[in-house]
Length: 176
Image (tube, rainbow, N blue to C red; front, side, top):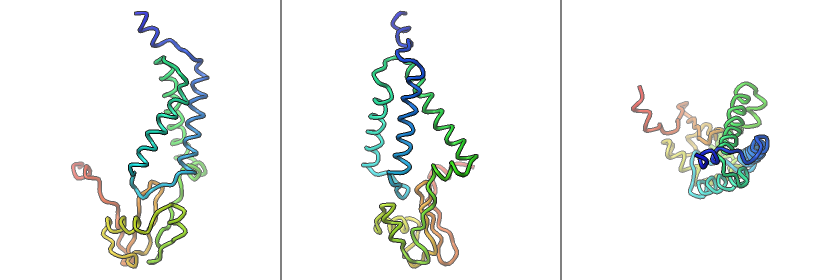
């Protein structure tokens, strides 16, 4: 019984864990929002590896060397709080939304590639062409406008007025 109580004994003050969680959360939020570039709706092996390493490194930074379940719950609660709070604030206040979500980036306009935008987003022409082919667009000339949306998806409007949407989720067919 004493071993079980030891698992729940607090090793650090609550404010200590909240401060650690807050600092690491905001640091990672700023890194992901302003330093790392978004990709066109995909996650490569290097991206996945990066996320796993960031999770491990940030976990060590937030935890210190705690062994208590209660300290872990305080830390997780802090991260959940900030995630919910920022979602709530960005939903209700446009300036917060603009700060947290990048604006859509025009990659193609009237059949002309915006090379500056491709460079800024670190998207190769081959990658852009691949995403256009996935949406049934054979040529850049057929595109009226193509935008990289904040979620990383590519929205394409063809010159004939038809919109090409991202491929449907296979699970959507099973839903009513």
